[in-house]
Length: 152
Image (cartoon, rainbow, N blue to C red; front, side):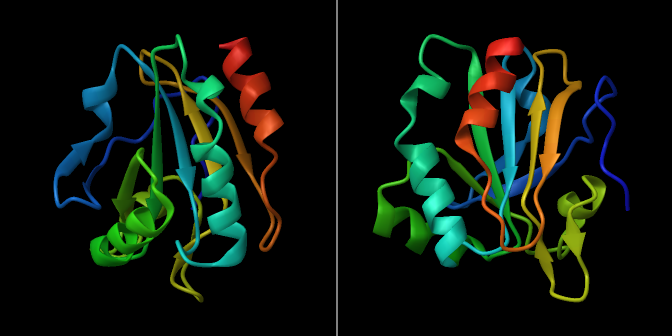
């Protein structure tokens, strides 16, 4: 399991969002995508990271940029989390086949059955422009997102 290299095509996937709709990464070509993998929706660190994303409209304002969050949680867990926190961006379930997209991005932890904190900025052509994978328990810095998006 290795993460996709910067400058190489991002692995495509189709996952179900928290509303039960099928979402395919390649359908976003023409816009950049901030692809954010999180371990569990209701864990403290993940909740804080997603709230920080929710409260940072400057990341997408005036840009052709979409934010997609992927977790191995079920769609029902993601829907409950979205409702509890007023989250509007796409929450995608990598529940079944369990962790398939997470594996393709090199962030699946098979011992724990979760995606680790990996983030991939995918350009409008579908190539990985930037990535970061944080150690277990370490939150990502939203300023890193801002810098990577500004450099796109």
